[in-house]
Length: 226
Image (tube, rainbow, N blue to C red; front, side, top):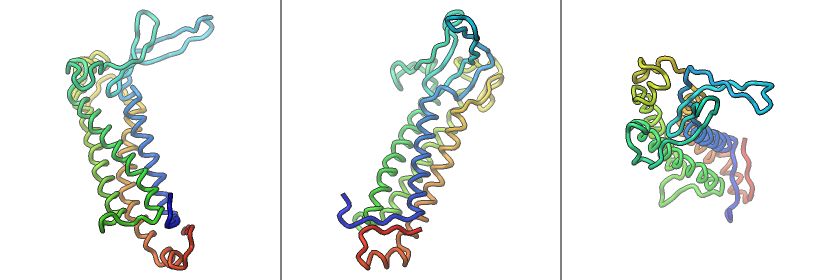
């Protein structure tokens, strides 16, 4: 509960929204098995047999979609023992990607919740600016997800990827595979995370603007500044 009132600026609102979208895109990149799309076309007929759905095998960070049997299409996880899964099944670079992106996304999520606290006129913690503190945490989060994102292609020469993409697949060159939606979600999430660190400073400047502080001094409980 905000006993001291609320101070909301357009920049702080934009900061919150960008951070929220960054969290959502990074989460989508982590959970969707669509980082690499294989060239094989899998035809799946419906029960009545009056139409056919075309699918492609694909792989994510810890999950995959592939043909099971002659016509079945199945998606599931291959990290059965988490980070302890055998490296021939769950390549080491992907374990680093999983760890770095998950930690970075969780840290970003914590800063997302903390942005709401700044609206309650809690502007410092032990004398240190709340906005600067969140800026640092978001910067660390951005570096973690970026490192995790860049490490992922190092495993494109793994047996799992060569089975999907062809024997010519190697680090940063997926041979016959195409880049899936998760790759683009991850890139968007990384960029938005860096953008959120910049917006945190803009939000701080708006928070301490003369217009906002004058209305706080006047005793207004709800202060909204464009």
